[in-house]
Amino acid sequence: MDSSLPFQRPKIRLRSSSATLPRSPVHSSPLVGPQEPIKKHRHHHSVHTHHHVTHISRRHAKESQQSSGDKTGVYWDLSKPPSRVEQSDSSPIDGNRRVSPARRDGRGRDVSVTIEPEDIAKERQKGRIRDKELRESLQALSDQSMKTTRQLDDLYYSILEKLSVLQSTISNLQDLSSMTKNLHTEFQKETSTFEADMREQIEAFGGFDNPKQRIGDFEKRVKTSKAKADELSARLESARARVLTLEAEEKEYQDMVSRQVDFE
Image 1 (cartoon, rainbow, N blue to C red):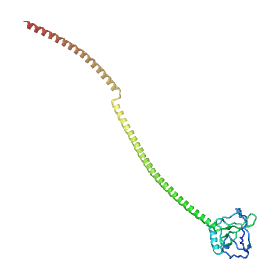
Image 2 (image 1 turned 90 degrees about the vertical axis):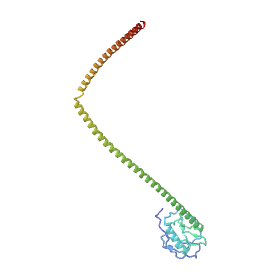
Image 3 (image 1 turned 180 degrees about the vertical axis):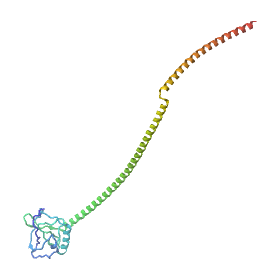
Image 4 (image 1 turned 45 degrees about the vertical axis):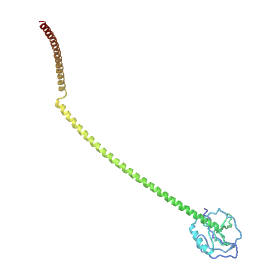
């Protein structure tokens, strides 16, 4: 907006030169200045929409409209903020038409805008629709917020549960590590003891040389004994063969003697 333009006090434009307006309480508002003498205004100019409009509080403008409209019948267009360049009180033209505050076009001429009751009703209807949409949006936002909060709570409790399981697993692993360490220490101790015992026994035997010699002598004796046993086995077989031969001869002799006895 162009803030370099000077602020000018509004002027009141009426169709009739004899019409006068009572002093409105709106002149105390920062939007409207003191009134000036009434001038005739019998024609309307087209609305020039390229004014630099300042952003004012709609609530303040609405309160000013209500306070001034009850006494003078003047109504403000709340859908469009008043011009910072020039403003003026509106005056009733007839029973159903209202005139908005005067504005100036690009050439510096006064421009007045007529506001119909239908426009006010439409704006109010639009306001109600906007309020309804805002309420619906707020309700949807609240529902979505509750849903998101519930999901975050579920996720939080799930993470806590998994964290508890993870902590339990870590604790079990620590216990297992401690048990493994103790078992390894005990195994090393027992191994050292067993190794010391074996060394003592070996040293008590005097080394492995004497046992080897003894084992060699024993093997020789075993071989000698086996040779003798084989020789004795051969002699036994020879004796058995001779015994069988003698038995056969004795049998033949007895048979011959028996036949001779039978002939006699």
